[in-house]
Length: 133
Ligand SMILES: [Zn+2]
Image (cartoon, rainbow, N blue to C red):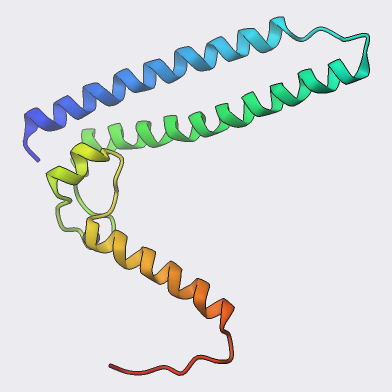
């Protein structure tokens, strides 16, 4: 990953973080304004449900914000583009498509296949025979 591309990704992430912060502030002010009581309990319930949905959505954005922050920290500390698992460089193509990747394609696939195996193991527990290929 060359410096120009890394700088480009960093700028992109900073911008994305600002966007998320702005929209999060919007929600907070909206929630404060709409915090009035309804005479009809079903109206109140509906209002609270939509608030829950909104907050749930914000929760995901919050996690995204943390991921972005972490990625910017990785860029600043020179760890960006290095696989957390094997320490090899993550391909530029992968980083351009998914800047928040912490694993190279091979490790990602390996971990995913392990997850799948674990799922199967739980499903077929007691019926598995291990072959040492
Ligand atoms: Zn790796």
